[in-house]
Length: 181
View 1 (tube, rainbow, N blue to C red):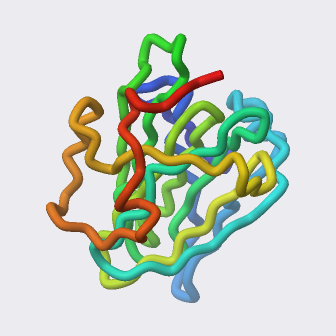
View 2 (tube, one colour):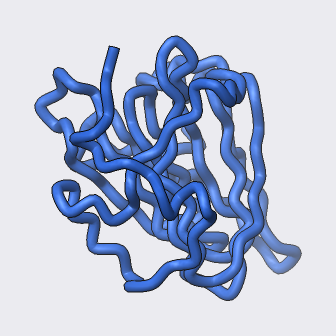
View 3 (cartoon, rainbow, N blue to C red):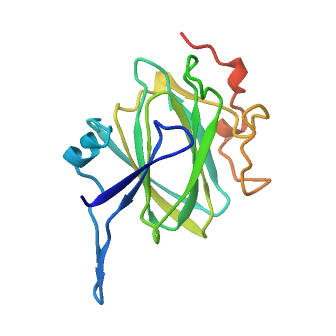
């Protein structure tokens, strides 16, 4: 199999390590294979691909879409490095409010699968980072939500104290302020 799938501290979030075939010309890898992913418990039909370019110390997140437009995500880095974070926001989950984080980079080729019911964010560690991710649901602006990146109850130890934030991310609510229908 061209992938190694690893559970994280939150079992539904999966770290994916592709097999890289390299030689003097460079390398080749498969970044996605529907049958292999389904066999590993990721049976999503991804419907949209997104890409962002961000500079060092940019923090994007913590974002999610509310039901019925919740999104599962498959995140990878094409250029640079990020610290990628998933926060469990499923109200009945034993991991509610807990987080897991992993470095994704163009050198380790790792990907992170984040299922529906999680908020997602990342911090750029390199000078710039080109991030691509697949989603299981189309973008629905009316269902776009977020959580404060520095929510003290979640207590994510971001590796930068004063990240670059969008105006939207500067005013996101705390997790305890969200209403789940």
